[in-house]
Image 1 (cartoon, rainbow, N blue to C red):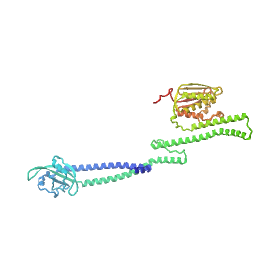
Image 2 (cartoon, helix red, strand yellow):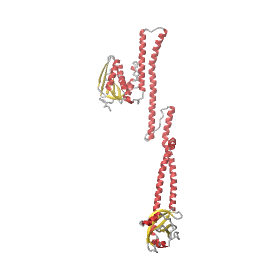
Image 3 (cartoon, rainbow, N blue to C red):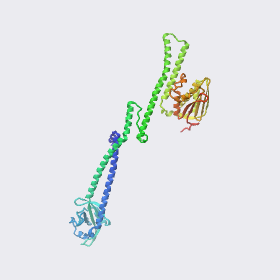
Image 4 (tube, rainbow, N blue to C red):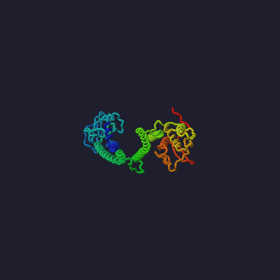
Length: 481
């Protein structure tokens, strides 16, 4: 059985569907055929029973030959009378059959007949199957009858037995069984063919989907799409739409990946070129034995250090952006946004000691990655420090889950606002400033992962306002035991 199941699983799905449909139809047809056969058999036997009861009621002479039959008993059939299709006989109390003159044969006496004589109470008679002396199957009714012996004058019960041949009934049932078998066979074959046709038609979209997947695996072409009717809502249509959506997402992700690689290569080229130039100058100075002036040497080393720092920051930003968004796991926890902002302020004040940074922070708790959230806040504050004038002021506020950072720098042009969160995008006026153009992209991604929103707007009297909205509560949730 298990081997057959394993072989069935190796068959194509359309073949399995056809076999399943044929098996289901075969079971249904078999159940209907068997039920029909038994119903017809019951009806035929019921008709025979009615005929036997009618024969008992209409027997000529009301069995006036009963006394003669008991006196002159014979076990062999006589010349039949008008009822040529009946077996009739009388069974004595000792089980001896007496065939009547109009019987077409003798019936074997069974225990049921003897029981009827012994009880003498089955006035309606007992109907059962039996056989004749020559083996012909018959349907028999046995009725008790009180008779008087002509010689002794004693009364005793005997049984009157009337039977009708079952050969015609059995032939009819055999013909019916043959017809039902043929019809069932034709039905099963037709169902199998119809199931195969339906499976082919129903699985045609799956074939197209399979071809599309194989094409993508073979060519890595993510631009392929499966046509789907707009009003189609079945499982195949949903699967096709899901595949189209998946390939679109993969194509977009692949395009973003290629763009990230190209942009990263472009951003890395400048500091690497500058590093190589500075290192070559230092190396040539050492090789030629002509040392550089001390001031120039210190400037070169400071430039190398700054470029190394910029490269390290760029690599860190790239690592953060390359991490899949779904890989958050157990690192997500309840975080105090107030403490996160205070920690970020301590770091940023060291980078802009000449600036005045004021903060008004109210308690607020969110679900996020602590390290990523602090980095995002630091990036926003760094952006404000970078564009603030000397001795400028930065205003930081946190209330009801809304963090605002306001600087008084030159602000962002209105036509540049749609691009500020794009990777590697930098304002033309900020190209000379340090940075990779990835800070705000990291901010947008972190805030989005925490379920919030971030926006940059121009302040009315100059400068930029960064607004971060994060869902949470002013108090931490109770700890679960």
